[in-house]
Image 1 (cartoon, rainbow, N blue to C red):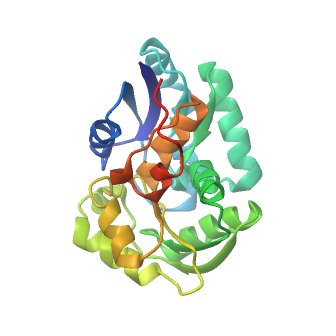
Image 2: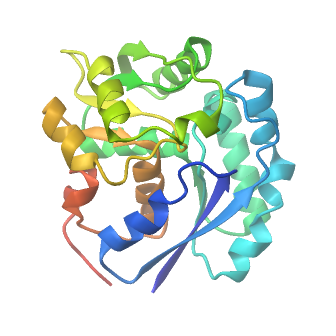
Length: 243
């Protein structure tokens, strides 16, 4: 059994995680602890408070007691808003508090793009434009080429959580760019676990979504490799090794 821990802000699309757990089809358990979201707003000051060390540390003990082997801060905007170096500091503080390997969804995107062996990305964000641009800057600082950024102007995670497959597909299509090798949908409040093959079929290229890469990152930290085609191209690159 491999137990993986996730600190998830509030309640929006956390039901993606039990669905992913089923699709993994192996001895992997995904444990979620909800953190206090504070003000639900895609605004820089609110996002920095949501990702503060104190809010993340509050959920660490419960994850430790669950037997988690690694922990991921399951929030994109609440990590990249700190910038590349600040996000590293955030993860380092989380690892020290948890006594476990740690990461965040922002770094999960960076590591997943590298895993796919590509550089040119398009971003389809639910966020307002000013926040979406911060994610673009984060990836650029990580050495990737962002060929297009599309924001959606949504302020709250609660609203994002109401989107269904049709809205997700429309966002991905609108965000795609002819030069992009992969399309990124960065919001863990967005339900995507059930539509990854449809997204990739529609665009004809890999699509990386927040909850998908968050789980993949936790598996990477725990040194697990799982082949799960229903979770998209990212989960087919590894050989299907099961412990």
